[in-house]
Amino acid sequence: MVKWKPLLSLIAMVAGLAIVVGALMLLRRPSAVTFVITSDTEGLLIPCGCRTVPAGGLARRQALLDNVRRTAKENPVIPVELANGFSTRATARELLNKEVGDYFSRNGYLVGVGGYDLELGIEKLRALSAKSRFFLAGQKSLEPGESLRLGGWGLGAIGDKGALLRVVFLSQTPPGGATLPDPLETFREERKKHPADGFVIFGSIAPETVAALHAEFPDLIAVVATWQADVTTMPQRAGDTWVVFNGDKGRRYTNLEIRWNGRRFEAWPEGGYLGPEAPSDPAVQAEVQKVLDQARAIDQSALDKLRGAVKSARSYVGSAACASCHQDAHKSWSLSRHAKAYEDLKIDHGEMDPVCLACHVTGLGSDSLPASEKLPFIQGVGCEACHGPGGGHPKAPMEKGEVSAAVCGRCHTQRDSPMFNAEGYWKLIGHK
Ligand code: HEC
Ligand code: HEC
Ligand code: HEC
Ligand code: HEC
Image (cartoon, rainbow, N blue to C red; front, side, top):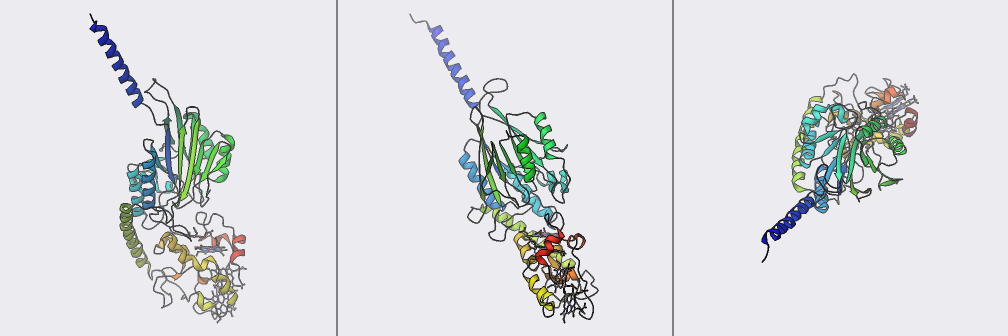
């Protein structure tokens, strides 16, 4: 005679156990995360920002992100903009920033806020990218970072806890940007407030600051930073810490995979250049092109309004007109970057934007330009940008010129020329 009751309850127990184990398996956490990182996009939508090969742009970035997502399979992929993703001064910045903001929103970016972004104000940033989350440690109205649990399984108090990874966004005061608190101090506090098993730092911080952070916290897993044009073409290892400088203008990316192996965190950084060989997402490409056309129209109409709006006491004659009598000065000038300053604006698509033109051309908006000039300015930083308009000279005298922070600093501001020092720079362009 078979005793059904105990057998049935045994079967029920085994089935129940299987369900519990199955459920716990479902509660397994991914043990790795990949951050796809870019920096200092400054509202730039398309490849730009270098004199040789155009790099960056949202369409290439979208394709990169989609590719990383495909290969990462079940592990989370988190896109990150380190800092200064938005333009603070282009005439069409509203439009450009909206497009960058939409791109961030669509892709679920963590957006670090830098000392230039802050000039827009935090409410403005939020409005530009409603679905993005903005981060900066040491600011009351922003989250300092994000905690992620990697590895292990379970719910609440039950199960293997894996390990807690804390991502902290730090930024320091950039040249000519909003004042930010000391990043070291900020990080010390942040670590006390949010203890974790491992820390990663993202943001806009100078090499000296990264060195100081590493000296004080040698257990950092990685620091991925942007600071002006500083770039590490290969990720650097400092003790146990990976250090990457990701460069400016959204040209480069770093994929940082972090894995909890059951005992400690391991990091795998891998970077690259978003150059012409990088695939482009056609839908993003098409949308960006539409926005750029609109931005171009905004620049054009601002420039048209400037035409002839500036009264000049004397007329401009152009640098070529000085060459016959000041041969040496003209030769040394024509070899300088001043002569190419207008050409270089095209690198960043600023060649019709009065904001950029103000420092990159001569006689902007003057009512006394040479008749041959079709544009409302003379291209480049010509002789007359420093010596004043040359009409009537040599009968009428020219301004002698002065090498000083006051004269050169009109254009060589902290932000645009952080390395500027009058004597050193004059040596490069000196003439008589
Ligand atoms: C026809 C010849 C001629 C041309 C063209 C000419 N200059 Fe001169 N320039 C002179 C002479 C001569 C002097 C010296 C006399 C003087 O100080 O006025 C001079 C002096 C100067 C000085 C020195 C002023 C000072 O106080 O020491 C500057 C700067 C200068 N020129 C700039 C220019 C620039 C810029 C142009 C083009 C827009 C130009 N010159 C075109 C002949 C010329
Ligand atoms: C009207 C604006 C303006 C003024 C005034 C000006 N600069 Fe410049 N300068 C520029 C711009 C713009 C560039 C960058 C050009 C480029 O690379 O496209 C530049 C570049 C330079 C460079 C080249 C730097 C490099 O990276 O090679 C030197 C050197 C320089 N300026 C020195 C001076 C000195 C010295 C003065 C003052 C006597 C001065 N500039 C005044 C706008 C100006
Ligand atoms: C306040 C003056 C000023 C304004 C405004 C300005 N620039 Fe410049 N720009 C400079 C100076 C000065 C340099 C040279 C910096 C140096 O070499 O020290 C420079 C350099 C550059 C360069 C060449 C250096 C490089 O990065 O390769 C580019 C490109 C450039 N500017 C683009 C722009 C664009 C685009 C805008 C408008 C959004 C703009 N600039 C607005 C002053 C200015
Ligand atoms: C970036 C600004 C800048 C530009 C551009 C520039 N100069 Fe000068 N130039 C100066 C300054 C500053 C001095 C005075 C240097 C000094 O005090 O020794 C000077 C000096 C001179 C002098 C000598 C004045 C004297 O009496 O010693 C002449 C001539 C002159 N420039 C002509 C030119 C000509 C011609 C061009 C264009 C081909 C030109 N400069 C472009 C800034 C400039």
